[in-house]
Amino acid sequence: MGKLMVIGGLILAGIGLLMMAGVPFGRLPGDFMLRRGNATFYFPLATSILVSVILTLLFAVLRR
Image (cartoon, rainbow, N blue to C red; front, side):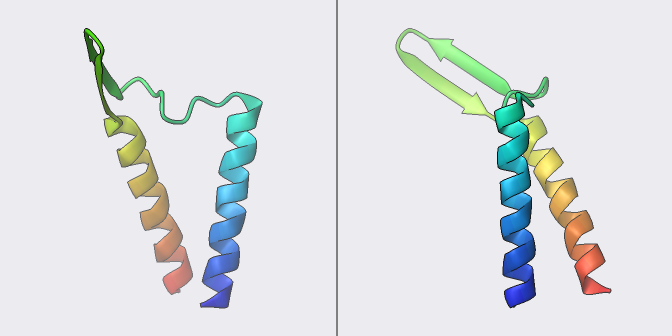
C-alpha cells in the first residue's frame, strides 16, 4: 500500500510539473464547454478518457 501511495504521489507531482510547463491538461480538444449567459457547463470528455487509459496502464504494470 505504501508503494502505491508513493507512486501515486510521484505521478501527481509529475502532472503538476507538466501543467506548470504549459501542457493544457483539462483543455484538450475533446473537452466540451458551453456558456449560456452567466451559466457555464464543462464536460472534460477527452481528459477523462486520457486519465482512464493512463490509470489502466499503471494498474496493469503494478499488478505484475
